[in-house]
Length: 200
Image 1: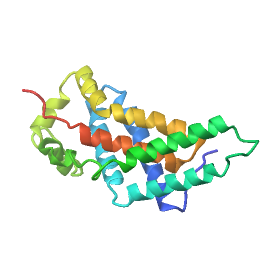
Image 2: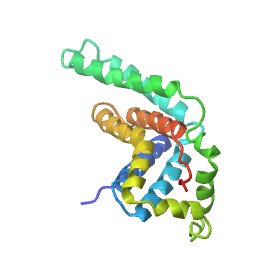
Image 3: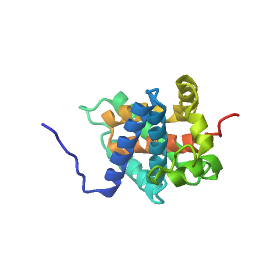
């Protein structure tokens, strides 16, 4: 039986979209074909679009604070493990602090990368990334798979860490708490790493 989730809360739907995109990115990055790495880049652009929503950060901070207050109410309950409770609250605090300290929007640095933005501007056009339209991008796609994968690994290390934290947090808190870690890691990834045009 196939089950479909359809939460009525828009913020939860946004987090589920991010979860879907990050899972897709992880699958594509493990492959060698240049077409898979092309669609991995498409997925990164989609993540940028979803995560750059102006109110996403404030919504996540509010959700984190709400869950923290809820969990604090379990203090002193003999049926609750204080050690486990402390661990969950510490994760929420870590996600809150990391998210709260991040300035600007996700992908702000990438938007200043002409090579990447030239790809992004044509990637939605049918056939818009042909070799005669984007010769530099075509040259990058001809690199050996190991070289492309190594470049992607450097640029997605924060994303992988984000996915690990999401799975851990989701088992002990909620999707909003884990999504904050995703947003934090995404911003670190997008602001600290930029793709460069292929070397000649």
